[in-house]
Image (cartoon, rainbow over all chains, first blue to last red; front, side, top):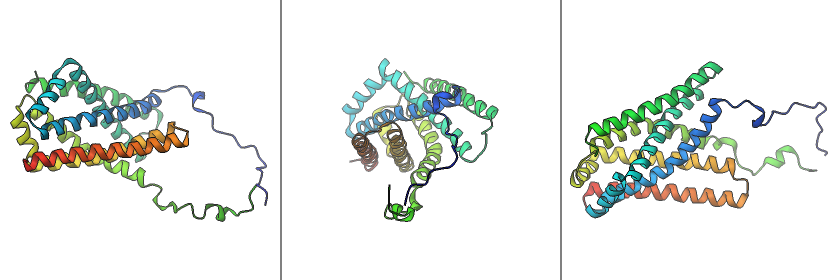
Length: 134
Length: 126
């Protein structure tokens, strides 16, 4: 039996670089990058819980790191990545259900994602400061 | 060129019935993570500025401990599937891909188990 040869030359879909770069494409990448960054966030969460379980000294070491400027910067980054990935996830769930896929709606959703995550992370840290973050 | 029929070629390669398992599990863990993450943020806010014994007491209370464990389980699963998709998309070399997928599994299990052990240890006060 021979492999059947297609009688007509069917069009092939163009590769990614043919398309004009849109915000929703960039945001697809950002969703993956924030997801990967959150793996490191999980390590930090594990450290926090293990330190709390281990005792006062271990917890003090964690607190020392978390309250240093580099620790704060990392935690701020993680909290933004978490909120961005969370809101981005809601966007994908909306798309999975088949809504919001028209060009204007897509753009509106990705913009809401960016603005929402930045607003949410600022709000979160303002609340943390209000609750006595030193 | 193959003498085999199309049916013969796909036989033994497994059923197509479980093909959407990871896809479905990723959505399920994502939805579970929404309320759990919001609860986690409220917890972090309420723990701000508290002393070590107070933090331990709050983390060890049954409701908080159960919610934390659910958060860890949902996110460890979500993380494992998500990272595996990224590996499968960008790593073409078969051996590298297998190694990374395996390490990713080890990572998710180690992180998940360590978190759960810590929460249980705090809760049981040992």
